[in-house]
Length: 108
Image (tube, rainbow, N blue to C red; front, side, top):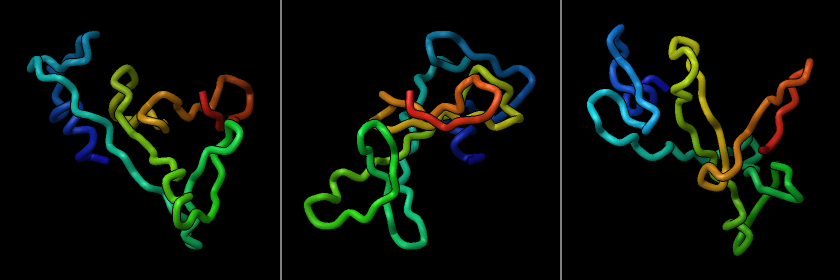
């Protein structure tokens, strides 16, 4: 994760500032998200079924249904806490814990 934060945000220094346009003070555009494939010990992959992420076995032609996880640092929260934005479908949907009294992971 250290490499992810450095690629997006640069080396952490007290002088580092960010602009709303999505660039760091160097003016360079932010890189694309990191994409990951998630598999459990049984080699199940994540798939979107009826608006929910489920772990399932996909083979052959169904393998294209596997959801890749996209990850970027959240530049708007304290960097030392390593905040991440985690999503699917190229970032069109994000995983969120919501704002209720108990954490409940959901797609938004």
